[in-house]
Length: 208
Image 1 (cartoon, rainbow, N blue to C red):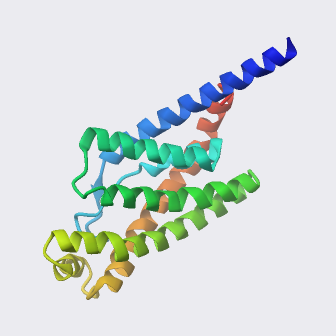
Image 2 (image 1 turned 180 degrees about the vertical axis):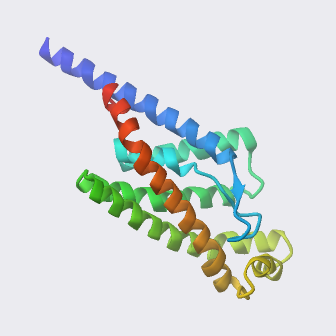
């Protein structure tokens, strides 16, 4: 009887966990549609969304693998609803840069689940996202967009319109892309710090 009860509890926990991961993925997909440009930081085709917020909270609550699955679900739902206008390059960039924040932050937090480790994790994750975002843009996203929309000079010109010091891909990534992701990482981290305790309590209550 004891083994049966333990098996039942384990199955219930798995089901609850899957339900929360799916729900967080759906919320992340919805947030991905809510995009806001930051014109004084980056060109208008860079738009900020907070779709990493549910993934980071989910990763803190249920581990890094859950965060990865939430991010993948988000991208799949977004593709099913909207499709892709970038031959999947934009979606790949969103996934890679999102995971650059979520994985370091959640791994560090899993080492020791304290407020201090959460803050350190989110700070490290934000830094990794800034570096990864600038690198991925410089070597993958910007060359792709340049090939599709009139050459690299045209792309750089958008950056120059925001920051006069932008003269090439390197300065574009340093002065536009890096600050953009820094602001995003800070906002997502602050909101996670505010919401995590309430949401983690709910998840624990349902045994996930």
